[in-house]
Image: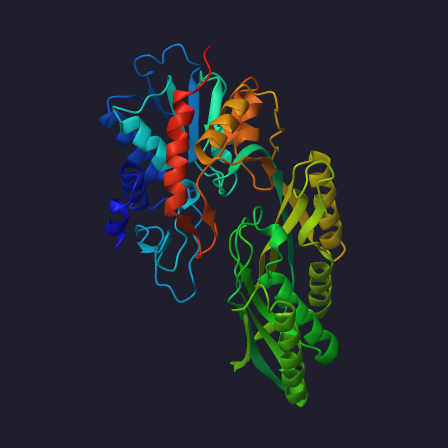
Length: 486
């Protein structure tokens, strides 16, 4: 099935993408892809280095006639987000991604595709392998763990790279030239509870929210997609307020940087309220579906009888955590007053787990303004501390401040206009790119981000445009030929 992808143009890029996608590469488990990339560089006879955190650096001299140009760094991350549909049988730790072609799109069978950021990695691999592509002195930087903490970028020490210009290939709109991005911080609320014995005279239900689009918690946060954790809490709160619903377990969401698509809860209701509860849930579900009909056409909410659980969350804790979740901000918090249509600050309630006496709520807060990031994180901390949770801030990383005076920027704008007879979108984005972190140890390095069109990143709906990838490849080759002189 993935063999069809190898016939696409540009052939070198798609073949390298297929090679890469045959290697399991979950965040935090990049050992196999690091070894794969090391072997790739060494087999080409190029200087290949693995730094102390696992980033791979491959160096290639300038091609003939390009020695007088500024040295460049081409950068992409090796890891990928692992998400699959509930009915897809797939083991990300052992299996390669199964790719299919659907019209102008390359997709995966029921899983994320890995185009984020595999197409960037494959681009660099194709250039390193080529004997005909003109380029200045090149350092290929393949970072690890971008998706779950950016620890690769954070661990890259100064002095390893000599390039003056960094080309980050991790943007998902082919008309966009990225010059800035948001920073982020993880906000994690935890608390323990006493598992109380399930009351007499109750009946058990399993409530399932699924069929949501999900998506990237930065790039898609402004689109108004449903958040399964938020919708589930709405149902649980209503059931408690009206019928004394008691929670046994909740398992909602998955990855910190993915808008939650699914949530499952096990609850109990007094038998005397059973008929009224089912009627009320149907009203609530119909209301939610109506609210999201335009944007979440596949939303499904099921309330089905199940075996009565042995224990439930202690009453006071349940009341507190459901109220905290209701109060906690989710979605866009502030739009930028300086850059039109840019989300400045947002939060994603990414993960909710209630089980075996422990509660854990994980959020990813983003902002292009450091003070705004910490303001929203503090608001979230206050929301959860009011219900007795301990709140931890972790994984904080800086945003990337735009540099409108970078020498590479007018070059790239002019080349885009020349190739496409259109103006590019020079913009900052709300995703977390590694440029801001890399810039802390390489402050003099100019940085630009661009890439082919990718839709649905961080979800099983992820897909990469074939025609856009061709357009992007031509642009990459022209950029390499036109890097400014030293």
